Image (cartoon, rainbow, N blue to C red):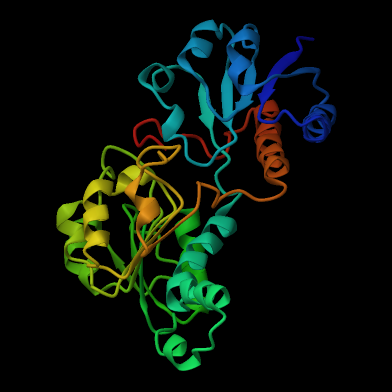
Length: 326
């Protein structure tokens, strides 16, 4: 019996590697399959990929692809994979799957952390602690509520739907945009991309939860950004290049919108001289919205579910649509 050779490059932590090994070996044992698991660092995939059948990783570079003579399937440990897609990989016969679904709630919570930051004036709370000056009235009159506000969600995938669900719990009115007209769960008003310019001007909060593709690149450009309400808040928990960042900075400098909350950037890591760091109406995190304790364990579960399907010859879950790019 030929052993299935699996290369795993998602963690350097020996304890996590041990848990991953146990999870994967359990699936193999149940299916009476012999496997050989190799662990390596992300940057060393190219040195170990030769003769491997399956890879579990965050990024799969061209050099690794050139050396992969037996590779049948790559399971990515991330949800979005625009950072690792290139023509040679897309045009190959290798099955590509993602870990979509493992951090929906975490990213949705992160988007609401940004919303509540602006609604409840958390910047003023930090200022109060620093100044130690009791100014209850001046503070309270600046706060607002999410209840009754219009939340526009651009992209109603698993994360966008989770954001819509939480928005309903806060009593918000949900406007949702997606290319798939069937995605209307928790949505009060559904609209298509072609209607965005007409609808964006009434939104109080706008959250981007779209994959980055040729179609979605700069979906919010100069024209769209100029249509935002003066008291609106823009939030990006998807990909930095969905927004014309240069023009957005101009909008923020001029105070044309209330604020911007972001976990993602046009260039990552974000350069230290980025003007975003200096803007008082911006709250930002270093692309950690989808991270949480136990993330690698969930990646292992996602991979193992697909490994079970792989062993039994059934269609895998979360297969990348090569035409759409996600």
